[in-house]
Length: 191
Ligand code: AP5
Ligand code: MG
Image (cartoon, rainbow, N blue to C red):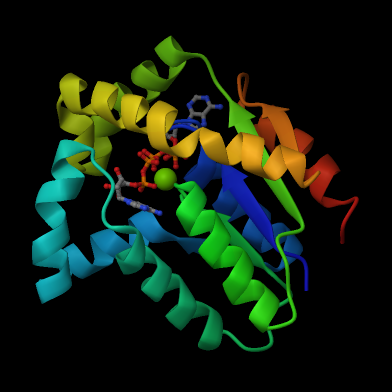
């Protein structure tokens, strides 16, 4: 098993790249954002509770996403590895993920962090708003809040994982194909 985190601010291309990487390396792509949006679409109680938080660009409680991920890991026996997208997003989530993986004889092998300029993030998300129907893409103030929340609550994960020697920054500017190639080159060292 090899397990990767695809990391980066909102709009950095985590989802775009994760879909392609998962296919190429036969990894299971687990996106907490996608899971939460599926709960909202299905009209579940959890989805109803989380939708307001998400529409403001705030983080949902750690325990909600930790439980979702734990269920997915246990329901995914036999996969070659996991590719976590948009999770973990706090140091507490990172510690929980490590514990969850350790208890099952696994670890985080590498965190691949996409570096993208602020203005490019905003440009991509405003462009996506037309197609995505995501309420958190429609309002520029919510986009800015998501980036601020990332800087405040998510960025400390970089220091945490750097100390463990598992953080790899990756240039996230340029074409989708060029970035994909860069990410593949790092992943190939592990698989
Ligand atoms: P989530 O769904 O994870 O959203 P996000 O982090 O805001 O990131 P995005 O999905 O917006 O961006 P992305 O990096 O995936 O970029 P993408 O590939 O789409 O989370 C949503 C919300 O759910 C959170 O705000 C929070 O409320 C909640 N949540 C989720 N997980 C949580 C957790 N663990 N803890 C707590 N709360 C959680 O690309 C963006 C656009 O750019 C696309 O249109 C794409 O086509 C385009 N694009 C991509 N690459 C390029 C390129 N190289 N050049 C030009 N355009 C590009
Ligand atoms: Mg995404």
